[in-house]
Amino acid sequence: MKLKPVVAGQFYPSKPVELQRLFKIFEQLKVPAVPGPVEALMLPHAGYVYSGTTAAVGYRALKEKPATVVVVGPSHYVSFKGVSVFSGDLLETPLGDIQVDQEARDFLLDFSPHLTDLPLAFEKEHSVEVHLPMIRHYFPEAQVVAVVMGQGENQAVRPLAEALATLRKQKPFLLVASSDLSHYPSYETAVRADRQFLDSLLTGDEKVVDRTDELILSQHYPEYYCTHCGKEPVSVLLRFAKDREAADIRLLSYRNSGDVTGDHSRVVGYSAVAFCQ
Image (tube, rainbow, N blue to C red; front, side):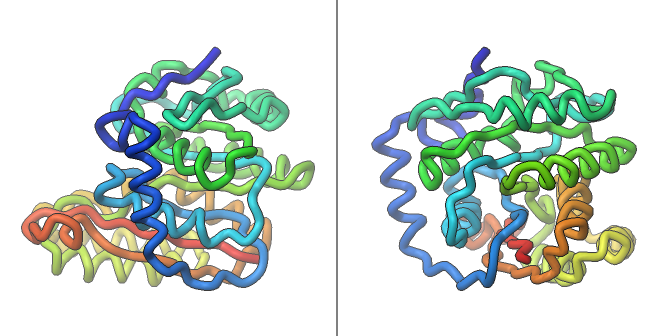
């Protein structure tokens, strides 16, 4: 079974030549040095014209190409409990198919009843898909496990975090938590709130992040809807990073859609954050 793209031609080009042209543009940006092995990344999932440069910084910062990448994104269109792990064997991209890491996939599906295969979760979802062409481009030999989490379903965080921590003891992989930052406030508000959130994220402490999340939302900024849309994937990442002792956390890149469009009235924030050993 193959996972077909649903936002190719919308969030990113569907033609290989156009994709490669975009990657060349992304690669004009200098990448910060990253010390030691990277265990996990938090990267955005908007259209490439808005967040592609930021996401590419994260992948380009890796000194070693991972053999397996586990991408965990939030569900934007389907409300469900738990975690959906794609159970097929192939992920289609305009640059060619990506093999699913069957060993890692089966391990996750067998680990907990909270981790199941819900095909509906992938039918319209972009939070995982937008990462696939980048992974195919930067790590052409890598295998992938695609995971979507129900939003507002905190009870699923612990089982997935435990499953990934246990799997990591058996085989190496890169964890990618897919999340954008603030949604739709003014440019100035987004920069202020995003910096506050990112400062908390750089502590690596999930409780600090949760308290900061509540504090920012309590400010009731106009048109401000969330500090980060991938709350559950990021919580999983923080627990995974703690288990891996990946305490050297680096902000590699930050921008928002206003930096691209020039429209500062309603923006979305994006960042690339590396969790290093």
